[in-house]
Image (cartoon, rainbow, N blue to C red; front, side, top):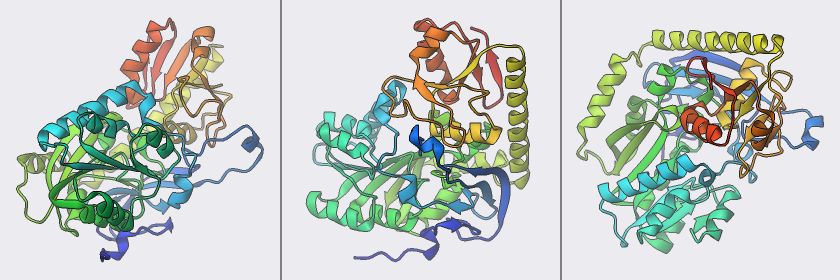
Length: 423
């Protein structure tokens, strides 16, 4: 069976003028971050001699449904190329977080070994492993070569983009799913209609789709412009998500807020219309309204804060350089590509970015600014005056780990506001 979904739920590559969810033309330009490279298309040494492709990176806001989105869509096959370098299972805090997530969902939905759990964008299978340990049936769907790592760990994973056909294939082989998951991918795909209809196809009646993403209220209140990159086609408010699922046989039935990514939203969507809805939903909609999330002035203030953050950081780093002190970067999440390219920080100002020894990004170079990414042992050898924590949303555990290993440097937290922590 083929689903018929709204035409605008297949986001076209190139310039976008209308809202990706409600198709409204009432769009406001909030922030222009210039033309930027794809944040997870890292450069090899050989690639430094060739031109780089960049794309417009601008944030728009929809006055009608309160969605924030990009105004340019890059082909998903270019963004999520087979050698995409992100791996879930190498970040200890994330592994622990995903384990607690699986435990809480098993408990909330009383899952047993009769249930099937499917994870869309399952990466190396870290989230699914928590369900597998409890004897629950699992399937992953992951388009990149990271799927091979999951399959080696006996977490059955289809190496494909999730579509209605893939949903039907899983359904015919394994039956319907009690729970479908998506962590940090539901804002990423252009094929909204295809993915949501596939979820509808694969879920059993009263089955639940649970996903997590950056949350617009946290992004705006935290000045987190670095969450804006080509992978994140949309940044959702709860209001915009309720609008999205109203087009389908699905109901937003519960919502939670968390601290992941510097502030995230976990949304529970049940198959069927007019399902019982938790009071958490109305309470969060009320908070969005009271916080000014539906008011253009809020976004204008956000844009001013972003410009000030740039000025403050650049003044600081140039002063450090004039004083002859050393400053380097630590951690290379996708978001730091937006930050460093928008600020205009290259290897003259930040000679390297240190990464953990297990990272797939080692010995590569930052897109756009060509800063080398090196093993973080170098921090202990060189003991620079300042270390900029580019994964600032994990600043506390990163600082603790580096201090335990003997780092004496002072720490710089670039966002939400520039903070210098003497070690």
